[in-house]
Length: 381
Image (cartoon, rainbow, N blue to C red; front, side):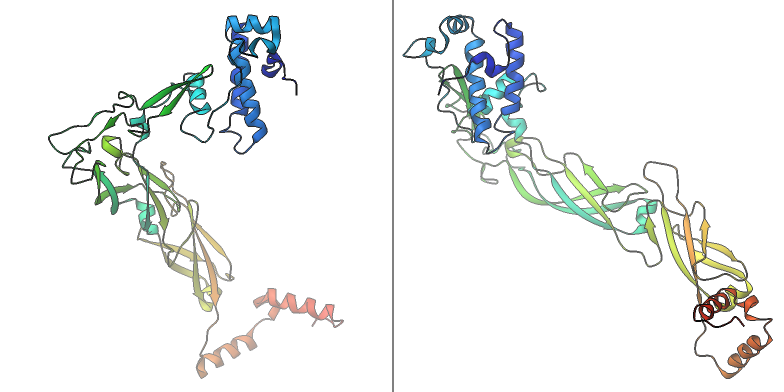
């Protein structure tokens, strides 16, 4: 199958300048890079074609030869084979390294050093707190199993009195370069694993890792207003890095215990309070607990029905990083008396007989049953 024109591969005109060719290559390489298209053989082939085209067009001599002779300029031993064979897309070199070299500064400052990339792992700790602690804020002590820097070797991994030496395989860079066709391929040094140094005499306490397992006790400050699922980050309190590399971070994930009185909805609290039938009928005051450990008084008007809701402003939850406080809502349920003695039953019977008509004392139930009778074809009483 005839090879596609290199200018068409990059999507530029034949008269395009070097800057336009470089810009087009960046766009195409980012689009078809194997890391962005895992398992896509078509994208992988396209990426190879883009690199092949750019390798020719970025070079003045190769481009002049291509403009004059086309693909024949690189066939049969002409100026070298333009094919890009022998690259490994599986990681640890190949096009990934070429891509880093090409886009390192463009993507934000070049590649990180091997020692930086070896920082310790982040850790997670689940902490359960009460609703009162979420309201007031708190200080908690947590015990975290972790890896810490070895005290014997001060995290270097080398036996005390000795020190790591530069790797003879890479000269201390952690990378090995190899020439493949027109490309210089950079791979991780297999001898030192990219560290740039090797340890000839490992520390006996840590086996050369530079870290040991140890439980640590840390103090955590919980701010007022946290919610279920809030994450607190403790920078540098995660796993220690290998051989003196920086530590990771520790993330505290909060969960809030169920409260016996309150249900929470954001900054607001909800509470249900049962009240006696007589209090609901005659009216009066009731006291309810608040999240700050105090009490609040609610005046219940005469004739209050189940489901009536009362709002207490500023008695809800603290709001994280704010001076604002939510509200508290108290919903009352009227309790029907049970286990009545003879005198109580007699008084209730007298109350029913002395009533001025059900439509005055029990308007909702009377209205409901009137509608039922009408529905069934009867007449209102």
